[in-house]
Every structure is written in C-alpha cells, then in structure tokens.
Amino acid sequence: MTRTVIRGGLVITAAEETHADVLIEDGRIVALAAHGSAAGESWTADRTIDATGKYVIPGGVDAHTHMELPFGGTFASDTFETGTRAAAWGGTTTIVDFAVQSQGQPLRAGLDAWYAKADSNCAIDYGFHMIVSDVNEGTLKEMDLLVAEGITSFKLFMAYPGVFYSDDGQILRAMQRSASNGGLIMMHAENGIAIDVLIEQALAEGRTDPRYHGEVRKVLLEAEATHRAIQLARVAGAPLYVVHVSAEEAVAELAQARDMGLNVFGETCPQYLFLSTDNLAEPDFEGAKYVCSTPLRPREHQAALWRGLRTNDLQVVSTDHCPFCFSGQKDLGRGDFSKIPNGLPGVENRMDLLHQAVVDGHISRRRWIEIASAAPARMFGLYPRKGTIAPGADADVVVYDPHAEQVISAETHHMNVDYSAYEGKRVTGRAETVLSRGETVIDRGEFTGRAGHGQYVPRGTCQNLI
Image (cartoon, rainbow, N blue to C red; front, side, top):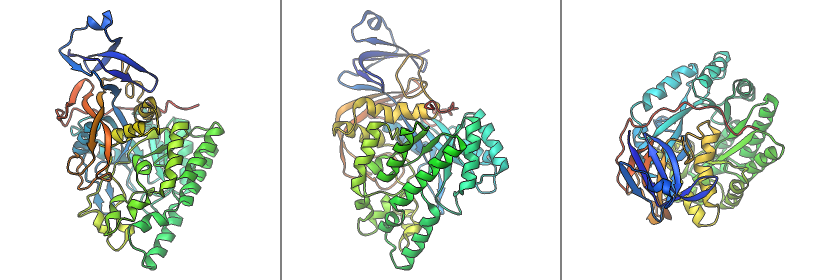
C-alpha cells in the first residue's frame, strides 16, 4: 500500500473550492483536510507533493477521442500509446474513445478490435463508445449486451453517406432500443445527403480549396439535423447527446429542447471556441490543417457557444481528437477538399485552453472543472469514480500551475502529428504533476508513466437524466 499527500493547494471541483490537503492511498483518494488541521498534520506518507500556490484539480475526462481511427483511406496518426501519453501531458487522465462497427459486421467485431488496439498500450484509463454504422435486428440486440458490459453509449451519424450514415428510420430504431436498455445515443448532426449535393456542385465549379469544406457544410444543415435528431429522440422517448456542436443555430435548438425539460445534451470542442473559418481560408493549402466536421464557423458563432457553456445548454467540452499529419495525410485532398481527412489534434491542449478561458473571463474556475471533468464523467457513467476529488474517487489528480505561461507549438507538444492547430497561441496555466490512480505519470514536467498503466473502465448509464 502506498500513501501520497498533496499539501498546500487550492482544491477545485465543480462544486467548491477549498484550501485542503489530499490523502491518497492505494490509488484512491481517502481523505481531505483543511490546511494546518490536526487531521491533516497527522498524516504520514511515502511521498509528499507540495502544491503551494497551485490548484489541485480532478484529472480531465475527454469523452470524445479517435485514436487510430480509419478515415478517408488513412488512419488517425495517434495510437492509443502516443495519444494517451499526450493526454496525460495536458492533464487529462481518462478518455472515452470510439470503437467502430464496419458495414456488414456485428458490433462485437468492432468492439473487440478496439479492445485489442488499446490493451496494454494506454498511459491513462479509457472507456469506449460504440459507433453504430449498420442498424439491423442483430445490431439492436447487441446494443443490450454492450450496455450490460459497460459500453453505454452509441454514436450514430446523419453525415457521411456510404460510410457511417444512418437514415431516420435506422436512427429511430436505435433510439427506441436505447430508451429501453438505458444507453445514450450520441449524434453527429449534419444533413449529409444535402451536404454531398453541395460538395458535388462546388467541385464541379472548381471550388476545391479547403475553405469550401466549411462553405458546403452549412450552418443550416447542422441546425436542421440537430432539430430532426431531437424530434426523433422525442418520438422514441430516448435521451440524446449531440456531439461537436459548432453553430449558434444548433445551440438554439438544444436550448429550446432543454427548456421543454427534455433529456437533450450538447458538447462543443476547443476548436469551435478558439478557431474559425479564418483558419480554413489560410493560403497555400494551410487551411487543410483545420478541416474537421462539423466545420469551423465564422467567429461570431463563438459568443453563442460560450454563452451555452455558461447557461448549461452545452454541458461538455471534449476534443474530438482525430489527428492527421499535414504532410502525407491532409495533403491527400490537394485539388479536392472532400478528400482531406476530417479531424484536428487537441487532446493535449484542452485543459490549458479552457483554463485560458477562465483567465479571459468566459467561464469560472469551477465551471472549467465542470465542463472538462465532472460533467463528462456524469454524462457517461463514470462519476464519482472520475471527475472529482472526494473520498472514494480514483486518485486521478492534477497539480496545476495557474501562473505558468506557455506557447502552444508542434515543436513542444507530444501528440503524434506534425502541426498544432493552435500554433503560437500563448496561454496561462499548465499541468505540473499528474497522477493516474495514484501513480505519477507527469512529474514536474517529466513523463514518468508507462504504456499499460491505463485500465479499461466499464461505464454505468448516463447520470444526468431527468
């Protein structure tokens, strides 16, 4: 049994901020005590971490990553080993990745393939969602079995016809099944059929540059799909979680549904909060670095996203981390924006970018922890094991220096990708020491973790349902 004490820091959770010491024993948090209290002073430990002047926060929970995802004839460039190591550097201690069902194959085959990819390779803990790309009677029965083994969320796509796309009837059937088995449907809400028409027309007219990726994936087609997903979920009596919300009009659809008391939830990502169509329009094909779906929007949409995070119409900030190198992968789409692999790197940057949002006055410190740790843990059945600092929780703890200044750059990041989406951006705040289940994985700016430390975590059902 090993004992660690973290002394002198400001403990921040979604619920409160307290000047407290934290006692960790055998991978779990066992007690908190006020600085200088008799209880805290009596603790003995194998290791003491001085957090004076620092924050002590729960490790980040990134509920939307794609390690080793096959897409557009290539694969996401981060493996589970490199991606989870980079996550740890950024103060994230749990990811929930997406296992993929291939057309014509059972869910189990896809899930087992992802178990194999991740097993013994992860530096931090991980779980899985299941991408359902072939809804049929067999698939629907399998959904029940997966919920029972801790795969409690299923992603469907209204986009990517011929790849991941499900029609409204298939979506309704899957939602009906989740209404009965307790699963949560995650929706990529874009009208992919209409988008494909616009892609075809743009290419025929010679509009081939990366910026046209954003122009054909129109705001109204995200808003329409979001509205349609909500109505299908109402018909099915099922909860709904809309991923990577990027447009003001889509936020409005979510807000309206939540005002009606529906179990409808929304996620956004740092790229929509900090980047815009200005990046997609960068010359010399540089815009390809920023091609993701849903696409980056004009800058004026950012205010609505920040407002949605403050009012809880958006509950979670995840990364949709899906990196492709600029050289050799993104450039598959030179001369045809539709062939640019969709995805951005970001699993290492999320906690720091959101702390910068605290510095800039967009959100409070507790809301930072809420949207980055506690809310994703509750949304996906991990709380209070993950997402908080409390007796009984896993000792996934970050000593965070709120005054450290850094410049985000591909030269210094640890993601396996040859560019940074936030190259040159100055931020204040940095994870100094990171513990995963009590084991130090980042020690004052040095990686001390190992592949295989991370464990698969079965999840309960969504804890946010009304």
